[in-house]
Image (cartoon, rainbow, N blue to C red; front, side):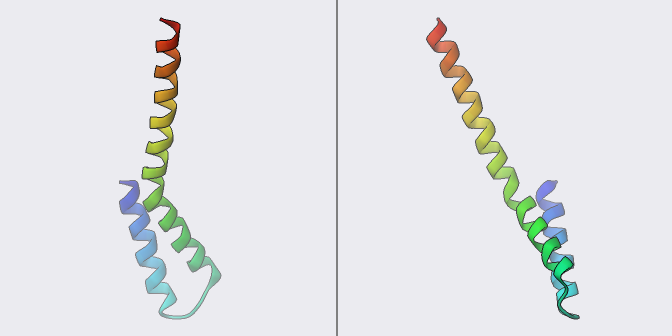
Length: 61
């Protein structure tokens, strides 16, 4: 769902940029780009943290 919202922001900002340049449209595009790629970044961070906790648990046993 987050990727869909990001693509929507990118699509709307590109349509707006065709009618003239505005800095806020560029920022909306960058926000959309971040939303598209953020799911992969956050899932990798959560995976790394989960593996750290598992390694600590294994060391205690």
